[in-house]
Amino acid sequence: MKTDILIMDDYPQLVLLGWNRAEREITGEKALALYERNWRFVDKNALTNKEIMLINDLKTKYGQGVLNV
Image 1 (cartoon, rainbow, N blue to C red):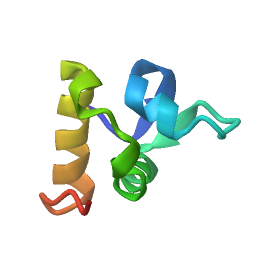
Image 2 (image 1 turned 30 degrees about the vertical axis):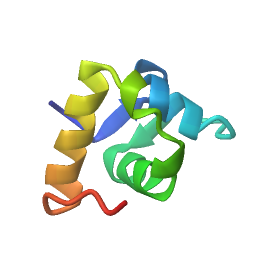
Image 3 (image 1 turned 60 degrees about the horizontal axis):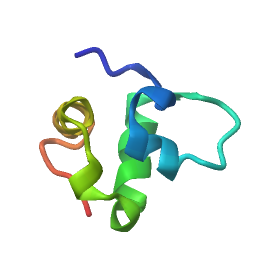
């Protein structure tokens, strides 16, 4: 999966985390940082398969395989 530029609206939990951002596109690196900083607000039961795959891809590409939460 290409994770260089993401459309936030494609990922429900990311939308909730980025509610205050005017831009709706985000880099993969910034998306991972947003997930990590706000993980306590992520509803893990509401994560879609697509979003789980995204988080795993971001973790691998930008987090050296670790989600720092």
